[in-house]
Image (tube, rainbow, N blue to C red):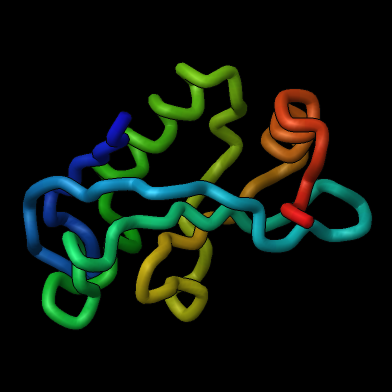
Amino acid sequence: MTVVFNVSGDGYWSSVKGSVEITDMRLGYINDERDFGELCVYFNDKHWDVNIDGLIYTDKQFMADLKAFLTAHGLSTDVSYSEQGMQGDDYVSCDIGKEFITAWENKFGVLVAE
């Protein structure tokens, strides 16, 4: 199954409208208090090249699609874009809060991939 999120081109670093193939989602960092962390939403960089298409960061439709996907899979929408400097060449970096971290742990049993 291929997961695709849309982009509306309204982000600060891209005016491209279209779709983005999502390849994975992983927790990057969780603080000791388990109330703040990072969710990395990986995309196919052969389909979306940040050097050509720009950063997805701040695109409203991408975030709406991400939250709809998380809801459909029983996860919290306690997610927002992290800062611009945290964005990667093949992933969108998002800040996550306690609700999301708890839901992720309840669903998958682990926080950070071993």
